[in-house]
Length: 385
Image (cartoon, rainbow, N blue to C red; front, top):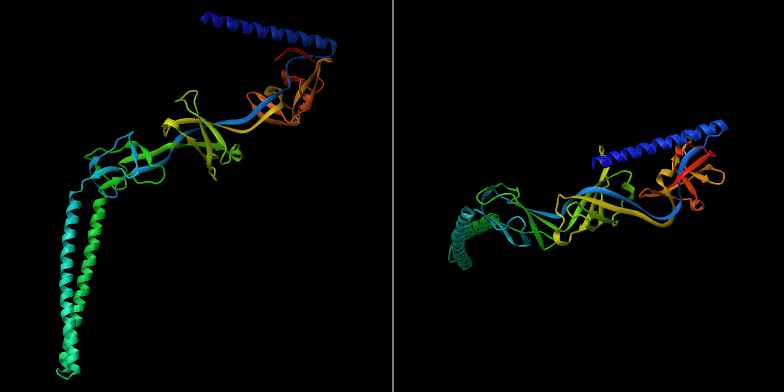
């Protein structure tokens, strides 16, 4: 292998020396005749199918994420799923220690029973007081009893009515306390609760049974990856080209030779002040749940495609001192070149579109040695690429 490399290097050196010798000899001959012919290589302008495509890099994110987190701090009694398990909406996930909360519910139920009994007794006393007051008013109308006795019956009725209202308020208070205790008890059970896809997958388990779960800190992370999001960052140069709905081809090193179909979902309306880049979200179909959040991806976006357009090798296009960009077209009959300004379009795989280059189709343009040329310069075509 080492000998083969040495041979290659020697051949390359000999080729370079030969090229320099021939070029120098021609230049000397040109000096003697007063005209220097530049040795160049050429290629033909041809019709080609070109695509304006760019490959961006980014990473995969889950389409949706659900963190199973408790609203209370408590001991984890049971975790019913593990990483990789499929979970349906409504499935029980985690059970926290609930003995204290069950006892609290029982206490509040007993308190409610007592409050209702007191309310019933107050209702009975109120009914008796109402009857006494009604009888006292009839007797007063018949002048059987005094005004004072009637007033006493009315006062007794008002007092019993107040007691009844207090008893009913105590019932309402006990019912509210029972509801609060039941809510606390329900918080010791965490169930799958989300909108959208019915089935998701457990991405990570953060705690084990016996651990202390902190309020609002996740015990499980459950994600929806039936369709994932590929997130890329684009510079302000490509930013104007990106429109929601554009098709995207996504690939990853994890699956060589395989691509995933996607489309642009959202384009951020603000670029980072330091990076000058904007975040773009791409929705990607994920058959077999192959793509996982965190994977590195490449997103290829084709902005335009043109068939049978004039194209030249990218190396043929040069920039003159006056700022014009163009190509040197070879006149083989007279061994001269002429500079032809061009408008560049799509660049694809080393070929560039010549927007106004229809008349150049089939013509030879310089691809090596063009930086030594001027309009009308003499050339010697060494080889056609």
